[in-house]
Image (cartoon, rainbow, N blue to C red; front, side, top):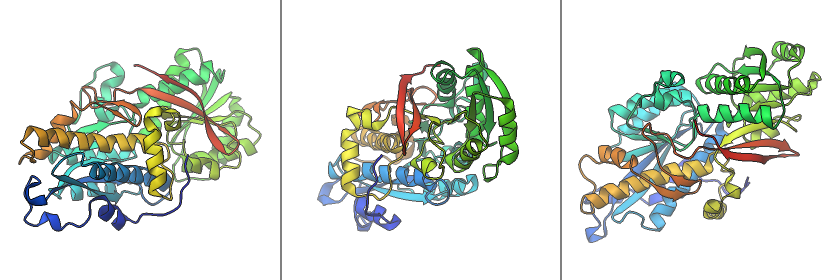
Length: 407
């Protein structure tokens, strides 16, 4: 992970991405006379609060994609602008942000959110306004395939919703398989934070783990705002489990892990992409040996990500791109490519029904992105099902194993 210097303010995001908004006054839909149409790409993420490390990485990566699209004149006649809004990982804020972005007629798509629970509050707003919503991080299967996906009764829920992160059906199953085969765990104590993401991830892990012969030694639920886990630690310790699995995010996972270790438990803590953050290690003095899975392959190992990494460094962002930098860049670029297709099909201009056309175009988008080949299946899910297992080694996460895991 990179750790860089110079911050960009929210205002700088808009200005550096596309310049002033004077071109909005009296401009046409082409580039005749040198004037360009402004297309806004919205963004929703937790830019403040406990999960801001991930949110800032998402914002910066989207900004980089917009900046590069403008530099290369990716869509002749169009200048892209990024409008980033803070949801603080709260569903009500996400819904308000979706409404605000949908109210701007120049918004042709929205990147985000981070949290699956926030996505649930945004999907209907996006659908009602024909605005494409592409998350680089949502992993709950229900968002695309409906609540009956476990019965293999799958149906697309929202035609405007897409994601560049694979689902917890894939991630949780990969985690269960990795725990049994590679960590050699035979019993697991499973904890979740009662949120949409955490519950789904823990369930998928448990299903796969037990199907391979593993045993769930106990289950527990926590409040994600809690930081004192004495009671749960006591139960986990008495269970004698080889592994403790946590479905949730790093702000609670870090103190949970530390308290487990301080109680004398030698079993490692394992979680998903919500735990995979450099801040997990910062917040947890006992993090060494813990595991986390995350969507995709480490961008540092991908030839396709070399330019992204170099450009991110050159841009001087003060925050790391974190777990979702590559998938965010690809989500943003997917909107750019959809706009490009729509403009090309309409004689070089945005049509009156541009939003609906962008959604249609996203279903056909395919390009080589930062994370590899980018395209979407019939549910709006990414076709890239690569997952990676990481382990804390010293003061950093180290990739241990990557593989595609098909449902």
